Length: 207
Image (spheres, rainbow, N blue to C red):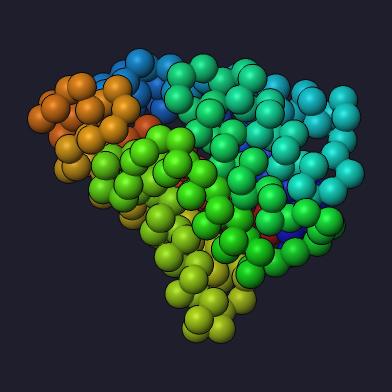
């Protein structure tokens, strides 16, 4: 189940993960972007953790709003607005809820992805974070239709995200700074898809 406590544990784990992986993520970004993706996310989730500890949210919607606003205010480049929009739009699904499960998590991802599409004007196959998030959503929907448990659905979701992440390597970037490189963007794993896969893998450990 998704509760305030499980979201807290997830977000605090992401803070740890992004700090541990910030050099790796920034190295991926150096090949096709500004080279600051990992540093930006580490700083952003440091801010989320700090604000959560200072003013713990009262419910799930408030938690997602806190995460969103902290990321938008503290993360540079496109990652802050995109991840911030993901949490803001996804969090609208959770209004007046303190506990929820698979159905709502599918809706969170669906609405969060729609927000990213609206803001970034990207689609699946453009070599962006969507190439991890769309397969994750599709895997959740498939797992639900097959009657799988929430835990099994989450596992299938992050595994699909990791496959999508790796599938960005041969893609030509069509959006973001990487698109400026043209053919030179081919052969590099997308940093946004990588950080998105990390986010979903961590979620599977706490929900």
